[in-house]
Length: 106
Image (tube, rainbow, N blue to C red; front, top):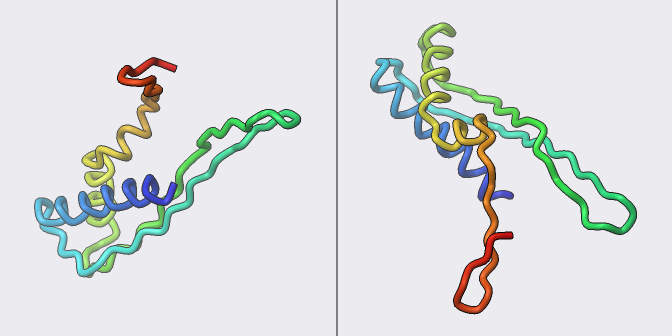
């Protein structure tokens, strides 16, 4: 989970840096705190099932630019972040199991 969360945050932060140059918004630093909310359901002793509920990202951009400029920057970074866009689209997750030299769909 830590790698997954780190990947989403790193992607967004990378896009903030990249788009700050394109939008001419000087950024001196960025801090992001992430909270991933999950729901786990379990009946009796059966294995639980986990479902993501939402992701909250608190973004602190160190900059002298206006709030409007920073909002424009973050909106652009959100659109450019492949990890975040993938999550927002809720694409299906495929599963395969290695069976000897073969792979089988689960």
